[in-house]
Amino acid sequence: MSAASAAGHTPIEDLPRRPLRHAATVGLLSWRAGPGLVVCQLALTVVAGLLPTGLVWGTKVLVDGLAAGDPDQALPAAGALALLGLASGVVPYVTAYLRTELDRRLDRLLQDGLYAAVTGFQGLSRFENPVFLDRLRMAAEATGGALTPVSSGLFDAARNVITLVSLLVSLTLLSPVMAGLVTAAAIPALVARMVMVRRRVGMLAGLSATARRQILYSSLITDVRAAKEVRLFGLGGFLKSRVLGELATLQAGERRLDRQEAITQSLLALLSTAVAGAGLLWAVLTALNGGLSLGDVTAFAGAVAGAQAALVGLVETVAGAHHALLLFGYHAEVTSLPDDLPSPPREAAVLPTMRHGIELRDVWFRYDDGHPWVLRGVDLTIPHGASVALVGLNGAGKSTLIKLLCRFYDPSRGAIYWDGVDIRDVPPSELRRRMGVLFQDYMCYDLTAAENIAMGEIEALHDRPRIESAARLAGVHDIVRALPRGYDTLLSRIFFGLEDEDDPQAGVVLSGGQWQRLALARALLRERRDLLILDEPSAGLDAQAEHEIHTRLVEHRAGRTSLLVSHRLGMVRAADLIVVLRGGEIVERGTHDDLMAVGGGYAKLFDLQARDYLAEAEA
Image 1 (cartoon, rainbow, N blue to C red):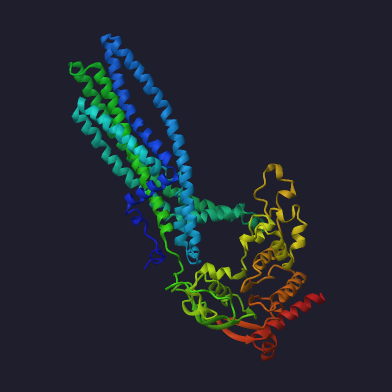
Image 2 (cartoon, rainbow, N blue to C red; image 1 turned 45 degrees about the horizontal axis):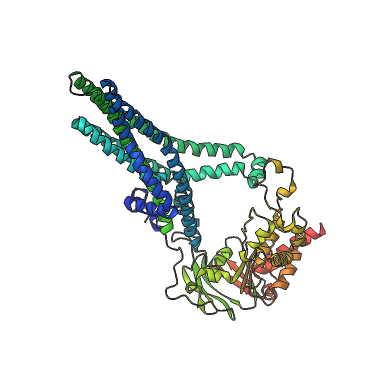
């Protein structure tokens, strides 16, 4: 089974198997976005569709009137042409305004649907799957503007059909043969454009990974977080060559398709020109023989040109709609995906207030069937009110265990119980609402200091006392209060303009240790939760700050159910239970004194770190 199929994705060649259904969906979305705009565009479509035919027949009447020297025929025709010309000048601008307004409203609906679906995925598996990320990037391309060929394009197609039918009827009255030839010449153009569009979207999908790499290398050149190493290690030339290499691959694919389209379109244009030229020659010869009047020749020439223009417009509209529907196919696919975590098999269980604790029973886990096991038969109990520390070398499975506790993934085997309730029987949002978590790879939001802390519980955004209390507990209150605007200081410099370049109040960049404390405050904002998980809470702190945070956390965790992960064993020695992971298995467990008495791996690692600290202190 392919990675795409295993991830629940559809190959590119199968995407718009239901184009009419997708078109109907976009039509319904357009109606939801603005029913009044749709009605107005429909009315203008009918008017715009009949204008070319009106101009053709008005011109015929005017020319015949002038040729006959009949002012009663020529003057009304001139007046009618003036009105038609006025309408031809005004209608496109009104239509363009209505179209752009509909695009804006449709874009909002599309983004709302896409991001509602994406944020509705409770797990992490899809976001760690490059195939899904490629599909998501393509789905994000289906904006209101990108779907214009479908939303407003339906009106364009209707206008071209009205124009085409009315002109072909007129042309049939003059020459049924020419009407048939003009229609037949458009069929190869339509088929060719559809094939070219499908190839282009297929190319974009196939090069999606290339595009992501090109964006990655480009961002590394311009990202302030990478700027130091790029300059220190002289990586600019290397990254630039990678950017240009991926760009060359993208442009080669585009160039190949552009060349094919140019040749195909040129040949089709020659066919249309030949048909129009032959028809005009026939009209002139017929007029010279008295079979057509001067006005008839004028009307014939205008009808052929108008019909061909309408056919070209219709072909382009259909091709554009086909392209847009291919993009919308990705949007429809992503928004129709079920949650990546299975729903409870029966009615969701009630998650009780913790009284006993959390139990992991024979938990095995790996990220994919082809990958090695990350956790192997883990049996662990986190008693209620106790502090448990998890230690081990990198790759031991500590962060994965935290992901399972937060139910970002489900165990491959075994189960996790919260006071006897399998957490798979509980909605993930309810489980996570009962936790406070500091991740090792915490986020640094380009928001104010208060907003950065409030991300831990968005309901507390306007509760400044709670925010400040969490900041005090994390030891960051004095740091934040000393900022130019205190808690309202923007912790970023990416938004300021030229006038703010020398204004420190426009944004402040924190140090790594300060960000660490701020992220800790974000986790501690959830002070009334059943479980507190801290993954490397002192990784970015110096020894003095680490001791200060350690003292605060020991006091805060007393009597609370908590799980602490740290490489710094001085942080974990006060825990009620210390668990040592190695290769995804628990190899030691006990209190600090128990493990030191055993003299196993934990004791050796603790002694090693202690000697390093003593050496630093003596130095």
